[in-house]
Image (tube, rainbow, N blue to C red; front, top):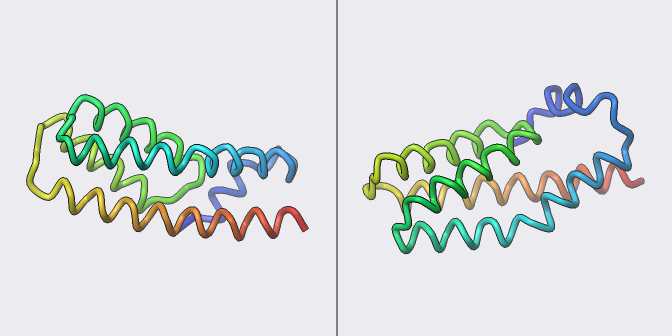
Length: 114
């Protein structure tokens, strides 16, 4: 869930059009990012899990979603430690949390565009 106060203070100097563009870039890349990360997890490809989870964490940080950030961080840490236990569960939770973020961003984008 987006921390709207932090998000809006982070983008206070940007116009609505720029914020919409930032949201659009995230949304355009989201499915591919999550597909890659899911594939990395299923293949237990720890190097790419670490890389892709770290990248996703940074991107999601722009939208101030603490739950998704924490889950991406946990995946990154698990990959660094080559921890298999609960890896699939954390990935599933990240898919759910980030899916909620996408829905929120779509609604926020709609509001900004009106």
